Length: 378
Ligand code: MG
Figure 1 (cartoon, rainbow, N blue to C red):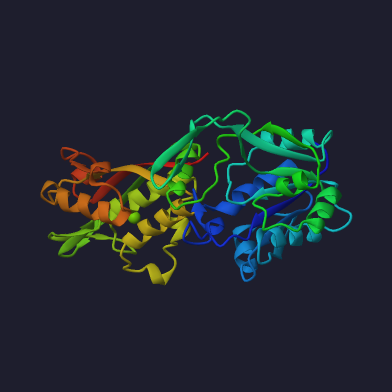
Figure 2: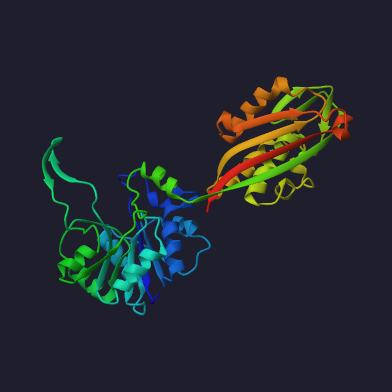
């Protein structure tokens, strides 16, 4: 791909969205980061991200770990923001520039390539899709006429330009705030090439659009398992799956020894490929002494959510001769469902004995096994 630089416009206030949508999490990742990653991995050098003044720190946080970008403050209008972005590219930047709207997170290399290829023969290029719906003009809730849709296109971004031609055209622009930069080039009399846009390049405008965007994120399904055992000792009760059961013994452990929650925590960590409970909560640390194990589970859940993960279902099996689990199963399922924020139908708690065999059969300890299924952005 030929050398190019890029301006990512993320300075909108999100008036129709209700908040600054560019920082909203889409599959665990800030909306603007999706486009920044796509542009950088396609080779944008440099990438200038334009944000509202006061949002520079938030922008750096959202792009943490990425390299090759600069952040500048936008102006009062989109027009001013784009001009600030272009100025920040510096005089030595490549002449091919892409201007992309951060509200379109699903930018792929194909569209970038098509726009850049068109710039080899035209001073401006626009990814666009033909209209497929029948178009009506209406007023006061009544149709006035059917508008022929021939020659009508939906303009998307990234829009590509010969940088110096665009800067000259923007400097000469005297109209209202243009909704895109191609408009300014049209006005200056430059030819603008059309290239195929992408249906996935949808623009997040309203809060409802986030649900559609989430559904478009490709996901993979992963499964993890967890095992745990604790030894019986003196006491008058036991915690299992977050529920306290009266019993003539207790399970011995550094924390509350809830083997059910420990196995389940390990199952989620296992699905994430993120170590085990001992890595995250070392038994050598005094602060976990007697700790309620629901915090271990909630921590694993937090790690899952930070990666845009979704918990699909969990299945826990407790193995012991005593106490009888069945009378407490409904309470355990409900507790897990509450802790995990997971529909009750996706939470299973089962129990079995080992018919007197092995360490659980001899009453030396209790064994727990869990499986968790998750989805992660692919
Ligand atoms: Mg344990």
